[in-house]
Length: 450
Image 1 (cartoon, rainbow, N blue to C red):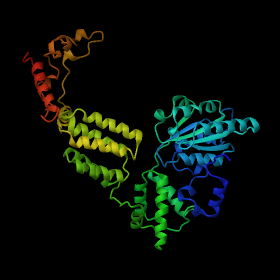
Image 2 (image 1 turned 90 degrees about the horizontal axis):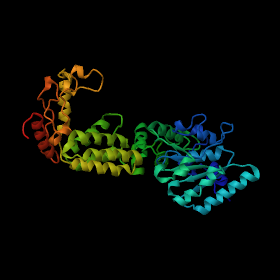
Image 3 (image 1 turned 30 degrees about the horizontal axis):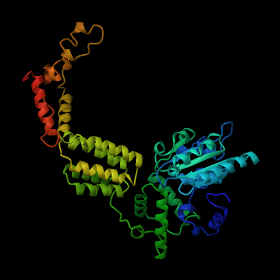
Image 4 (image 1 turned 120 degrees about the vertical axis):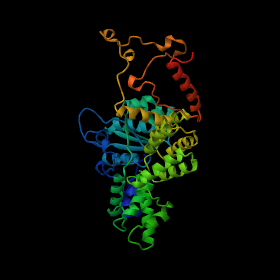
């Protein structure tokens, strides 16, 4: 018997006894119209709609690679395809399958196509676990469309899927589910007969905590809902209290509103703890933000700002480290992103501090806003266009690379600001070197010293 995503026997049992299957399985969409989120992939004429048989014409369905974090609908989309399509549907998992199983599916697909014109859709879960040789075995079948591949991965396909397979497939990126997406799913699960059938209610504060601990993962949200609903019913309660949910999932409800004061208060406390070099306090506030389901990109942006605002040239590596952390966070997402954010937070908290760069641009902007600007000195103006020399533009400019030390004694600031200094480096960390350098450079620019 061919492997199938859900066997007819299991579906029949589920219909007769819904509680025999987990709530997350029971609430899986049966059509693309029931899918939560991912609306950018479900528009008319999209690859997924063509895959389930919507649309016609000479262009056949394309193989697709579904990329996204766990719990946002990759397997669900494959399940919908298996139910909606009149094609032969086969499922393999890269955890257990090898080249032998892949070749068996391909041989079966060729026989089905040649024997009675039946197309085959192959769903391959966790394709990133396949080796290069195993992925190579898929190429002839995908290229000749003996199978239409639907592959799922939680890892960046540009690193985990071979280029020839990527070029023969459409890469569809699934977006994280929003709170509104999950809220709609939870409320359907509470009321629909295949879900909890209205057996319990979900108060607003409990729902809010459930959304926080779900972290955008629909499977996690439904699993927690089912467990807490069972606990409430065992107690004879008509609704799932916040206390019952906390006991069930063993997660206290942290006071943190991503759209309210707590969002900004905790973020402010994180940055001020880093500024104050209290690494333990910084990690505490970072943990509160992570546990509350804060967008990791928001945290990473705050760390990049901190690197320039509070550290600057006292540690020139701080900003590149924060930028690298932000890039890593964007690529990997939670839960692994917590490690990267911790790495960056510790480094910034323990780095030497300087706000000299912050004060420097602030002072320069203040002068500009006051109107203290003045004309650009004639010798610094653009001299490339015809007639510039007649206006005196670029005349008398000394090219720094032509003089010893590559520092030419000439005026750069407008007359109105001549002699003004904005940057006052500290003697902390690596900025002590810049303090010595800027003093010598300013002397040379004024024509003082050799």
